[in-house]
Image 1: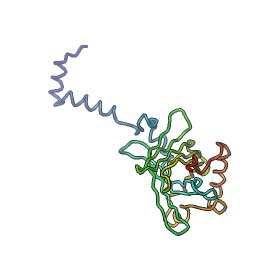
Image 2 (image 1 turned 45 degrees about the vertical axis):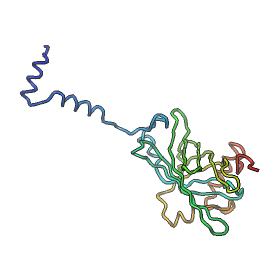
Image 3 (image 1 turned 60 degrees about the horizontal axis):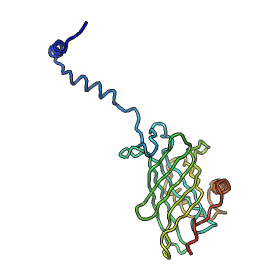
Image 4 (image 1 turned 60 degrees about the vertical axis):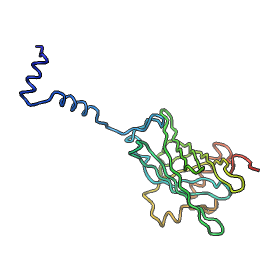
Length: 221
């Protein structure tokens, strides 16, 4: 049986329906997203699949200026709804020998290239301090962790900015650390007395696997 458009409209009028409303409703239901996705240039990954990445971590790296020290910072991965992708935030506190304290905060985007086991943490403070961390996918552990290499831009009052590089080990915290734990863990630590000996050993293994890491990528002198 063929229903003419005029007949279809007549039936809709009797039922007090607007045909356009029905089609709009169907389109809306079909278009309802089941997941949020990152932009294509960051890998197009879905939030649901990479939700296990979200959480609080400690990031360990070698000091740029002192061969005998390890830096630990508070690292966080979170989903930014407005940007529709994973972001990261890294908070670091350094204390000089004279007691003066310096605080740094980095933030950026997470890129996960499809078809790879690579995670890239891309950041720029807008003040000349930049960094790129190329790491593994999140490994189950326990505890869950990333291993990788950091390339950054640091500053020296004598000659300005210069590139730096370091192995990186990023380990998930058991929960959100409180202020007392952060005060104990975050900062610059002697390599022979770092509070997490396992992280120190991981940095050594990464250095051995990927080659030697200088505290500076070139000699500014």
